[in-house]
Length: 166
Image 1 (cartoon, rainbow, N blue to C red):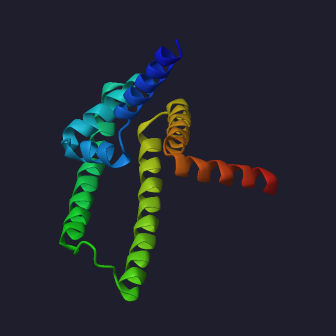
Image 2 (cartoon, rainbow, N blue to C red):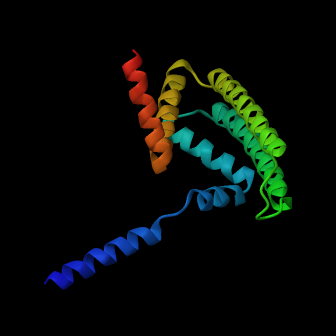
C-alpha cells in the first residue's frame, strides 16, 4: 500500500513538473505569433470582457496591432544583439554601465508608452468600460506578479512594506 501511494505521488509530481513551462518558452511562443493574430486575440478578449461595439473594436484592434508590431520589432532587435554577443565572455564594466543605462531608458520609455496607451483607451472606451478595463489590468498585473516565484515574493514584500508605511 505504501509503495502504491509513493508511486502515485511520484506520478503526480512528474506530470505536474512536465507540464510546467518556463517563462522564456511562453515568451518565445508569444513572439512567434503574427502581430495581427495577437491584436485580434487581445481585441476579442476585451470585447468579451467589456462588450465593445464595432467602432470600439476597430479602434482597439488598430491600437493593439500597432503595439504588437512595435513589440515584435523591438524583440527582434534585442535578440539580434543577443546573438552577436559572444557566449562565456563577461562584459567589461563600461559595457555593464551602458547596459544599465539602456535598461533605465527602456523602462522610462515603457512607462511613457503605458501612459499613452491608457489615454488612448480612455478615448476609445466609455467611462464604465474604462473603469472595468482598469480593474482587469490590475488583476492581470497581480496574476503576473504571482506567476513567478521570485517576482511574486518581491511583489508581496513590496505590498506589505507599503501597508506598513501608511
